Length: 309
Image 1 (cartoon, rainbow, N blue to C red):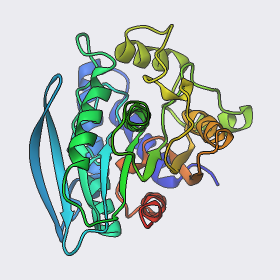
Image 2: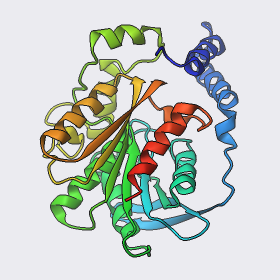
Image 3: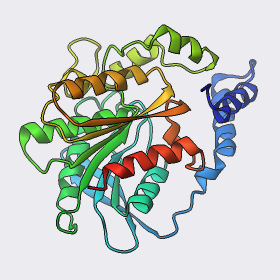
Image 4: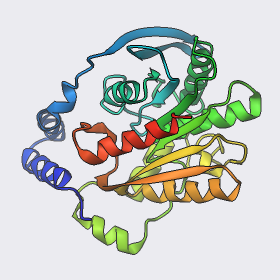
């Protein structure tokens, strides 16, 4: 199917809101104002029936904020969730963190911890964000759960890479392994594999793409270089056997889809049970939009099925 009208309308509005002639700062402010209005439904997403609590735990690099979500009634399990943002952006309030956590808690009846890992910048580099996620995972595994209840580990985009890294480090260093990995449009490889020419042509209507230069800048900011990338930084280069069953959600129109597709083949090759769901018509980061969008809801339900063990 073509790019969903929701996104084509959004992109047209962004182009109109940031018309030529404005400074970069003004364009950024106008774009943010437009997006707040366009995705206002997600801003006010209903958390009825979910207790939300902020807490802080101590990590090896300092305090790590967490936001905890608990549904009413007996828990059916738990999830540690890592938002995306290219290792550079994002927080506990972004919809890919807050709304996803509400909906996983509500739909699956699980407790969710959303982790505010340190973002990469001039002074924070790999492995610091992943260290924060691993500390949060170890802490979350120590929290009380009904006996035999599953515990999931997941994230979106860069957060999916960090979740996968935490699973690899747990496999190699010891600790409670996840029962399932929930990875949304993961960025797991550098260089990023290219999408097929046919898919690239279909994506020509999109004004925002993951061009090679932008991906390179993202990796430099995170790792500090683009050569000799540690396997645990972008874990598509790591040994992947022995990982938990994995659920992959991919956006149909996304340059990073090629990374998710390659990761799926790699996991299958080493015997890791893996299932994937293609969110039709969606662009990268579709979980940053309200679950009233059908494919966002379908993606969440696909993850929920992985927690029903």
